[in-house]
Length: 140
Image (cartoon, rainbow, N blue to C red):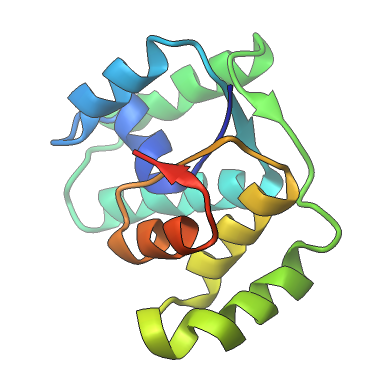
C-alpha cells in the first residue's frame, strides 16, 4: 500500500499529539509513505511554528533528528514533486475551491498524492480530507 501523508500526519508521528495514537496504529501495516520536497518544507515550518508558539521547546525539537534518521534509513519513500502537480493543483482549486474552501497547500498535497498514484491519503486536516475524498482517494 502506498500512502501520501501530509505534514499534520507526519508531525504526529514524531511529536506527541492527540493524533499520535492514530498515526502509530496506521503505521503498523508498514505502508510506503511518500515524502516529497514539498512535504519536507512543510515539516520544517511545522516544527519551527510549534517552537515559535511555545508549544515545543528547542530541546523537544530533537524530533527532527529522529525524522532525518528515518529518512536516511529508508523508512519513508522519497519522491519528487510530480511535474504536473501544480497544474492539477490549479485545476482542483477551480473545481473545489468555492465548494470546500481549500487553500493552495491543501490542493497541492492532494495533487501530489494523485500524481504519485497513492492508494491512500492520510491527513488530520478537514479540508484536505474532503478534497482527497472528492477526488476518490481513500482517507483515514
